[in-house]
Image 1 (cartoon, rainbow, N blue to C red):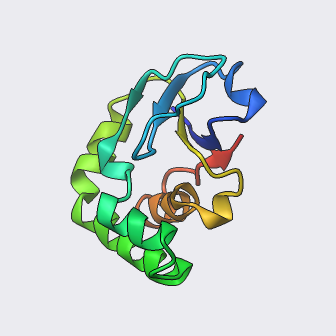
Image 2: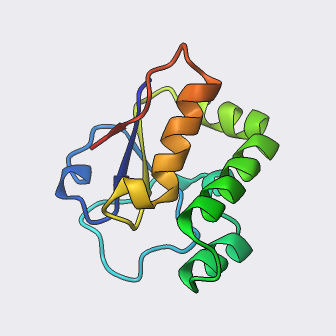
Length: 123
């Protein structure tokens, strides 16, 4: 099983042969050319953290630190949920640039926690 990350509007997601998982706090209000197979709520930033960042009350570094704290707190549940899939999966959210998004933070964190697994690749 391999883990990939991407954004909802990436055309490559439609042809991805695996499980499509949302890690976004809110589901898309626009139509997608594919079905989302599920969600992992533990990978969604908290509503409070997300709103602070979106409202520019905190910068990206503070957002990143808060999200990493959340990942650490939920580590065992996150690892269990991800490893329960027997197919490749792609974790999806809105931002096109993963470097300005929680999925990029997750990708780094996952590799740090599980160096025996490959770092999730971006589609």
